Image (cartoon, rainbow, N blue to C red; front, side):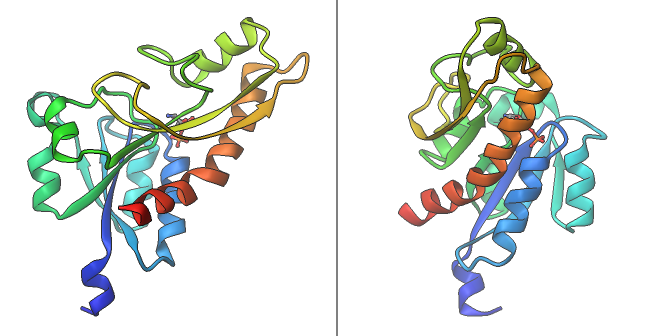
Length: 195
Ligand code: GRF
């Protein structure tokens, strides 16, 4: 193993769904000397992100609720040498033992401009429906450190998009996904480089 590999940060990506953000993050770090995605954790059997793990030959871990509630797999991640945790559409709250094991080393992306439109139950289409129902002129993405509350930790980065009159939640979702894919991998790299 080369000297570089020894220094590479190992990233664990936690996701519950399709994994389009996970794919962009994997791709970004394929040609990057400071970090690599070495584990994909998912709580939903059959989720698209697990197919991505298989195709990309990245170790998957199917999260089992009882074990997760105990320590959020903190001990498992540490045994695997994980140095950084990325939530990319992960719908479970992060238990305190995992927060404690990875202080300011867990980041999340939320498909709205926190502190608005965040919190329990605000995910996916529910977010975009609420934003449009409130006749907002803008929405966007928020990348933030994770603490023990949903969508609550210090904000690292935000980007905005305009909402045109008549935009449906699906149209807004597409605009948001474009922002996520454009920014999340680079912001993760920036945060890792700062440590
Ligand atoms: C994204 O919209 C992200 O903001 C939110 O969950 C969604 C994940 O989408 N946290 P995907 O599974 O990465 O396509």
